[in-house]
Amino acid sequence: MTSRRSATHTPVMLSEVLRALDVQPGGRYIDCTLGGGGHAAAILEKSSPGGQLLGIDADPLALEVARERLQYFKESALLVNENFVKMQSIAIKYDFFPVHGILLDLGLSSMQLSESGRGFSFQYDRPLDMRFSPSEKLSAADIVNTYPEAKLADILKTYGEETQGNRIAHYIVETRPIETTRELAELIEKVVGRRGKIHPATKTFQALRIAVNRELENLESTLRQALELLGYRGRLVVISYHSLEDRIVKQFMQKEAKDCICPPTTPVCVCGHTARLKIINKKVITPSETELSENPRSRSARLRAAERITVRADTFGTNDDNAFPDIDVSKGWRRPVLLQKIKMAFLTAS
Ligand SMILES: C[S@@+](CC[C@H](N)C(=O)[O-])C[C@H]1O[C@@H](n2cnc3c(N)ncnc32)[C@H](O)[C@@H]1O
Image (cartoon, rainbow, N blue to C red; front, top):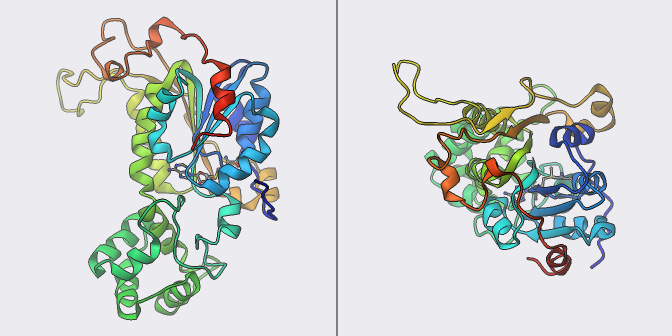
C-alpha cells in the first residue's frame, strides 16, 4: 500500500536517542512507538551490519508509513501493529529477546495530529475520536457524551492537571451531545476564557487522549516489561511529552536503581528489592536550541535513559527474573534470533 502524506514526522532528539541507546552493530532493539519510523531507520542504520529491530505501533496508519520508510531494512525489521502494552508477549512470540535497547517515544506523531482525522488536535475540526488504534472501543466522544459529570471532572483534573476541571465538566454535561473538536474547543474557550498563548482547551484535549488510550496505565506496565526484556547492559530510553508521563518514568527508573525500597523509617530492609537499572542521565535531557528552532513540536520532550545491570548473585532467582526464566542476564546473551523468521514476518505481522 502506498501512502500519500504531506506531513512527515521529524524524530525528536535523534542523536541523543542513538547515544542513550548506545546503538551497536549487530544489536537487537525494540522501538515501541514506531510512528513515522524516523528513530527506527536511524537505529537500523547504526546497528548494521546485523542489527535487528522489532517495531510496534498501535496505529495501523503509522505502521503503513513506517513500513514504507523502512523498506530498505526489511530483512532486519519486524513491524507489528499492536499496543506496546503487549510488548513482552510479542517479543516472546517472535523470539526477540533479550534486547540491547528499548525505545519509547511517547505521545503523538505529526501525522496523527494533522492528518489522521481522529481529532487529536483542536486546530482541525474533526470528530471526537482520539484512539491510537481504531480497534479500541472507547472514543473521546463516548467519554464526553456519556460519562457522569464527576467522573469527567476527575479525568480533566487528573490527566490534564486542569484546575478548571469542575467548571468545564459541568458545561460539557449541560451542552452535550458534543460531536467535534471545534465544538468542544469553543465551549471550553467560552467557559474559561483565553489567557496567554496557550489555547484553553489544551489540557482538556490531553486529558481525554490519555483517558481514551489508557496511556498512564499502559506506560507503567510497559516499563516493567521492558526491564524483563533487556539483556545485561541493555538500555531503556524514554521520551515523554508531559509531566505525568515523565514522573512515571522518573519514579520507575529511580525505584529500579535502588537496592532497597523500604520506607526510610524501617530499621532493617524487609523488601528484598534489588537494583536492576543504573540511571544514565541523572538530569533529564531536553532538545537543543537548534532542534527547538527547527522543530518547535519538540519543545516539551524529556529524555530519560537507564541501563540494565545484573542482579546480585545472592539474590538471583528470588526476584521478578523468575517470571521470565529464559533471560538470565547474569549469563550474557542468548543466540540471536533467526533472521529468516523476521524476513517472513515483515509484511505479515499484525
Ligand atoms: C511520537 S510518535 C513516534 C515517532 C517515531 N519515534 C518517529 O521517529 O517517527 C508516537 C507513536 O507512538 C504510538 N503509540 C502511542 N501509544 C502507543 C501504545 N500504547 N502502543 C503502541 N503505539 C503507541 C502512536 O501511535 C505514534 O505513532
